[in-house]
Image 1 (cartoon, helix red, strand yellow):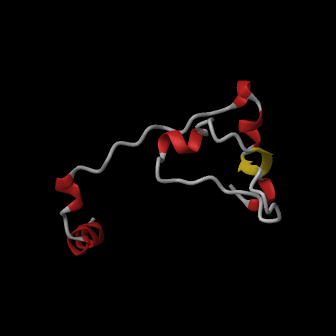
Image 2 (cartoon, helix red, strand yellow; image 1 turned 60 degrees about the vertical axis):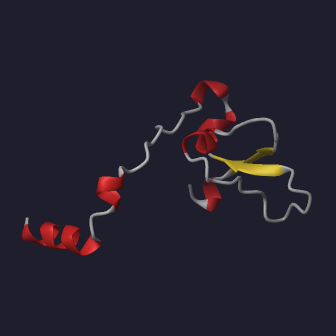
Image 3 (cartoon, one colour; image 1 turned 90 degrees about the vertical axis):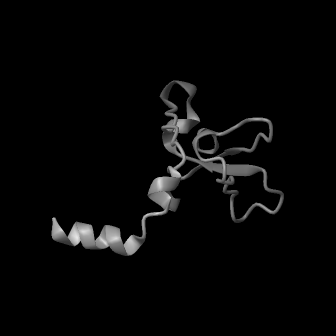
Amino acid sequence: MYPTEAKWISHDPTFIYPLQESFSNTSSHFHPNDSFLTRVAVCASCLKLLTRCHSPKVDKVPIEIQEVPILIVSIYLLCI
């Protein structure tokens, strides 16, 4: 989401925003000119409940894939 496309809504600390459901390490982005952190950025579709889209739930990367050295993967891609 580009900063110019962000919509600002009142922050509700009890509500789990769609992006936080899928990516639990993601924190809310508060309005930069708001010293009390009362407004949080959302996309235009999240403003309305009917148009709100939930991000896909992403599984953790299996350890077997994490252990593959990056060099081997890049060599393989160059050979294709």
